[in-house]
Amino acid sequence: MTPRIQCISPIDGSVYAERIPLTLAEARDAATRAGAAQVNWSRLPLQQRIDRVLAGVERLGEMNSEIVTELAWQMGRPVRYGGEFGGVRERSDYMASIASDALAAIVVEDTDEFDRRIVREPLGVVLIVAPWNYPFMTAINTLVPALIAGNTVVLKHASQTLLVGERLASAFHSAGVPEDVFQSLVLDHQTTADLIAAGCFGFVNFTGSVAGGRAIERAAAGTFTAVGTELGGKDPAYVMEDADLETAAGTIMDGAMYNSGQCCCGIERIYVCDALYDEFVERAVAITSAYRLGNPLQSETSLGPMANLRFANEVRAQVAEAIAAGATALIDPALYPNDNGTYLMPQILVNVDHSMRVMREESFGPVVGIMKVTSDEQAVALMNDSEFGLTASLWTASRQRAGRIGRQLQTGTVFMNRCDYLDPALCWTGCKDTGRGGSLSVIAYHNLTRPKSFHFKNL
Image 1 (cartoon, one colour):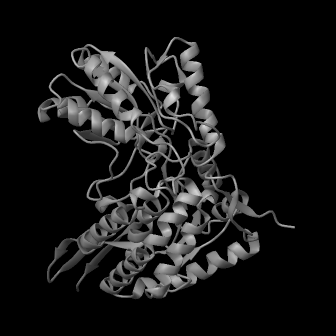
Image 2 (tube, one colour):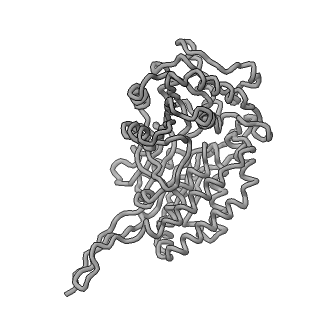
Image 3 (cartoon, rainbow, N blue to C red):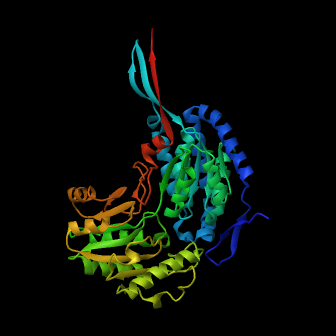
């Protein structure tokens, strides 16, 4: 009997949803149908594809009240935050607005003698392997531009958010996107790898762990399938002496603790200049101590459970190891008597250094270490002392200083006076073990299409 794929709710450990994954034969048939459907889909006028995709997004918005509760059950985000539809709409609207220009031909010459141009052609079938932490927005990042560009899409969503793919498919199908053009499939890891290895896709987008990214690349080896990955992160913030301290503390701690710290670009380590260090730490502790840990279905809860017990226990292990090595924990456990299982209290650590896993390895939970620095040079060296490179957050009144520091950082995005945000007009990308590729912005359309040159000579 085929093992079922289950979503175990972090709220109470119950089986919230379960599905039977497709067999390899069934999955290959679905991929074949996607390939056949791509021809007619790509022949639709661009504006028709845009209209249907945006209509699908609107249908998704009509489901939002139900989706918010489903997300709480599936991955633990408190209902008070209202789900992800605001971000979904912002990204979708922007990508639709730039599609015509992004996909337009580059005309080199158009004369009586020559027509020379470069056009963009869709890659065919795009596979999206989406994560559970922001299950709608991470899927939308590729789904919307892929469909608009004329590709068909197969979505394999994380088991922790089994229902998300079904919601997306229902919304888009009801808006006129044909069922074979966008398919949400329940697949196990081996079947997914087998499909990639068989060359069933023109592009694979994966968001997840470093180990998962390596598995995707191994599966694609030798197929010449384009692969885009967004993997781990250990994103830093640096607070300089001319920073707005109140804004910096509030924004950075929100970036560290929101979604129980389960954010791809969440702040996981903080470096503060010596002049502001004590006051920043004091403010950070006050902010963090005010979080209310509890059932995400209750409106007063501001910190829900982590999505999986294994994730919570990994954070606990990192904290315990750091304390044993000399770190000091500043958040009083008495404030969080319900710290147990998936329900993990937030924590701030000082007296930390880069010998500790909590400052070096991805935590992906509500914990952050704070270190004092005495110069920009020291801060840059510490921020770059990481296997990852997704974002860095700089806090200063000087754009010139931020620019000078930012150019030295090994990271995909540099923020000044903000953090933990995806700007759809800018390329979302990383370096080092964070992976390679780029979603959103005009770059997404370039990655989801291929250039084709026309060189016509009139005789």
